[in-house]
Length: 212
Image 1 (spheres, rainbow, N blue to C red):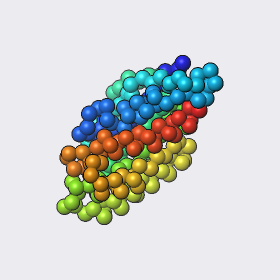
Image 2 (tube, one colour):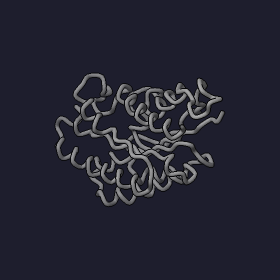
Image 3 (tube, one colour):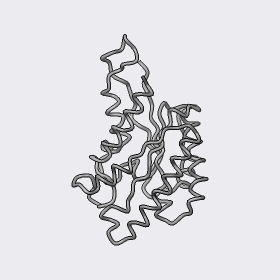
Image 4 (cartoon, rainbow, N blue to C red):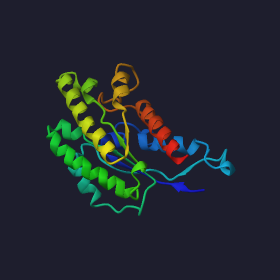
């Protein structure tokens, strides 16, 4: 049976800032996929997918250009079966222009496609969470932040469509979840493992459909 590989590119939301590594969305995604029965091969029904531990290239605070620079310093596998990209919140946080973000995000997305061996359908763009509705932003201009996050996510969604990759919207539910206890980490800013679990379920559902 094939052992699948997953490369996750991003920032604090990808490494799972404030939660154990095993509760980050890349690790929870792999955990879900490992437990999922193989259904696309009659001889393999009842067996499970083999997934290596996710490879994560991400750091808290990274913007698109910083992620690009870091990628240039890393050594990668020749190809990955799954590549995720979640980046942009720090571009918005630092007040970087949306048009600059668009150019840099498209470069990263094309890199992600290359990492996936040129297979666009194996690349998954994940929307940027809205930190403007978190307790951390209580003394900030929340509506302005949310509006800018929407604009950046529109850029991400359009790029995903243009380059024929998947786009997964986690922001809508994340905004709702922030009104309930247990979905925010102790810093009042980052998601909890419970929230990352929801992202992992969404992501793994689409990956499984692809695999089958």
